[in-house]
Length: 95
Image (cartoon, rainbow, N blue to C red):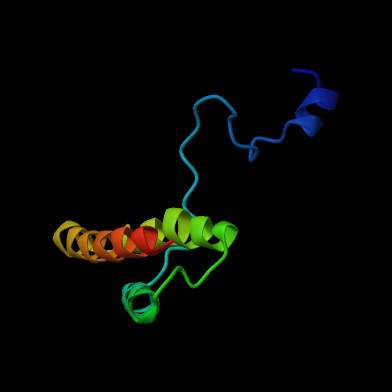
């Protein structure tokens, strides 16, 4: 490889087609995940209808909650999924 190309592509640049997977930027600590899930579920349980507009509902229920559940052990995550499912059904029925 010519020297000019070597400068453009330093050896520290990762391979675009098969290098090692990047490490996640941030992993939510377990206590924060449980605390956030607890507060979110309590808010849903106390609400007669969805407490957020549709965009926020999608952000919370389809992105944030699954990310938090991913931190928990599988059995505990399944328990939380069931709890959220019950509230989701109730709130959807009230809409």
